Amino acid sequence: MSGLQGFLGKLSDPSSNSDSTNSAAPGRSAAHNVGIKKKPIKGWDDDDDDDDDGLRGERITQTATTTTTTTATTSRPPPSSSSPQPSSVPSFPPAPTSQTPPSPPPRGPLSPLEAKFSKILDEPNVNLESLKAAAWCGCPESDRGEVWRLLLGYSPTNRGRRETVLERKRGEYWKAIEGCGLGSGGDEHDHPGITKTEQVLLRQILVDLPRTAPSIPLFHHPSIQLLLKRVLYLWSIRNPACSYVQGLNDLCCPFVWSFLSEHTLSAQSKPITKGIDVTKEIPTTTLQHIESDTYWCLTGLLNSIQDHYTPNQPGLQKQVYTLSKIVERTDANLSQHLTSHGVEFIQFAFKWCNCLLVREFDVSVICRLWDTHISEGSEGFSVFHVYTCAALLGKFSEEVQGIHDFGDLFQFLQGGMKEKTEAWGEEEVAVLCSQAFVLKSLFQNSQAHLT
Image 1 (cartoon, one colour):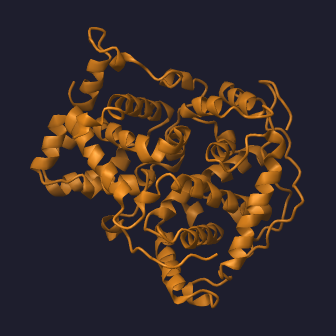
Image 2: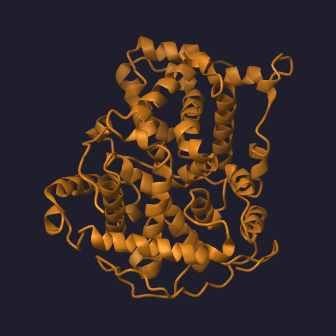
Image 3: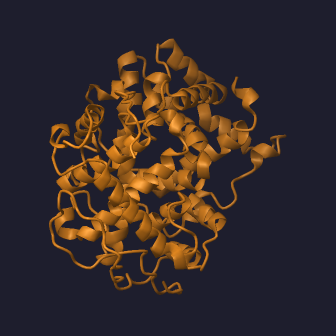
């Protein structure tokens, strides 16, 4: 056994003299994920065109513009749903009305994992620490949307105030969309209310949207493309220090997928499919809620990593450097192999950190991985993520060291790893997160070891 696996194996050796390295994350082992059915997962394919080499993207700068408690055998209604609406989604829908849609019928008996989350979420005031500990090991699809809204600070912990606050924030989003000059046209020239600088910004977003999750028809549905355009444009003009950077479109996908899945499981009692026709199967009001929730949750996530997207991208540069040092300390042979063949970490790890591994996994796998990252709080994507990348690289250390051609090495690290994770399920993700936790425990508070 060699590389990272051997490094971690030594840490678990009972003969080790270090007490700290034998510690484990309480409640965070794969054994705690009982009740989750492992299933093969198709890969999240990504286009292999030359935009991978340009993930830094064209940076645009401009001025800013302005319940019921249940038992283990009954189900908890979702946070919000909607009554049937017209099957078509207007290009520029009006702001949702104040009327709250009726709750759908119960979805049936709960699994042990769902019952665990139901108990936490049905409390009058959700204990965020308990929720983080449970979500670290993975959320059930039916509750993931509500968990993410809570942990990202978008939804209040007080159950009685939750619907009121969500209704207000959703209304704020649609008022902002109405006021940002984004009309119903298709390209940057169809919006007379925006400036030339904003037209350039919108053009870059429109160029990237067709590249979003190319193998998943859902994300190329006109209604979802329009959703992504509005979310990204509003976030960009509200954050002029960062603005839009290529790759931000990918970060919306896990949110859209999770919120859609939340609806289909609660209202239709069936999992979401990659080819779902949202205009026929999802009510208009629900799509509006999904769009506003995506915006606010994306904002909460990006608030912790804004230095990834500011000029010179210092956050990304730091993560790539830290990753190289972790691999150098835990798997010297792998580090030397990459160096000897002229492969620099910035050439492949930049995408991993810029797109938060969204392009390396299937959408359902990345949602499970994000459960853990979001549970880590403000350090989930700014700190824990780099240790996840180190664990992922260590997972394929032997295969990487078996490749001796620069072109083949680069291709494997840039996109070939997706083929290896196609069949990943809960168990593989849990092991990856556990290894990342061990690495973080070893190195995060001992930065001298990484210099």
